[in-house]
Length: 65
Image 1 (tube, rainbow, N blue to C red):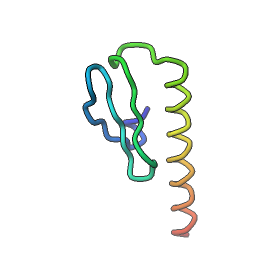
Image 2: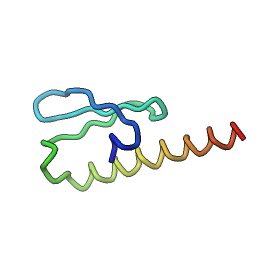
Image 3: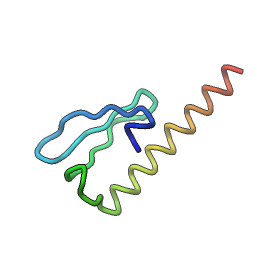
């Protein structure tokens, strides 16, 4: 989901991955391997990050009109 929205994956320590996006403040850290189930707090953080980026994309689109 993050990759589809334009987040870039950066290697982290151990099984952690860091995700950055030009429209997202800070970075998002997710633990575990790609095939592992995310913890509920991580799912919440991912949803919030996606919401933030989508809202900023909508704002940019409105400004361009």
